[in-house]
Amino acid sequence: MAGQNLKGLPRINAAFFNSLKGFKATWVHEEAFRQEVLLSIVAAPLGFWLGQTGVEKALLLGSLLLVLIVELINTGIEVAIDRISFERHELSGRAKDIGSAAVLTSLMLAVVVWVLVLLPHYF
View 1 (cartoon, rainbow, N blue to C red):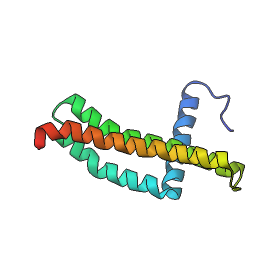
View 2: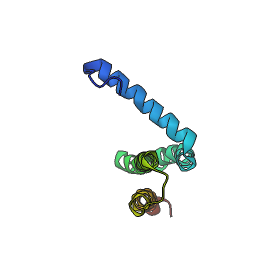
View 3: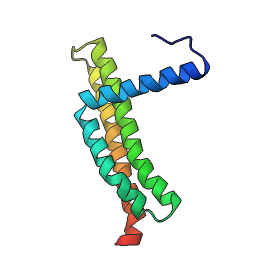
């Protein structure tokens, strides 16, 4: 991998642009990520507006970011498994299912956070 021996600002710069490539690849190849980004684009301003304290805003927005983070990790796992082999294997399927469960759990956490933060104020 290019840039392995970089140090300081050049390493940070290379890491930043590698991250942008990762976002782009995930956006292009993963429908779930696109849906979650679009949901976050709608929900994030609502969370910032509806949260009454800094902590509430952080919880509302952080729970959305967590969904995106977990989706990125899940996608990385899936891509690595597919790189190894497209052949069906119990452990490959299990790894993908576990990654999917992590995404589902992060989505459930986001819903719980939003309900617990907003319910007392608005309902």
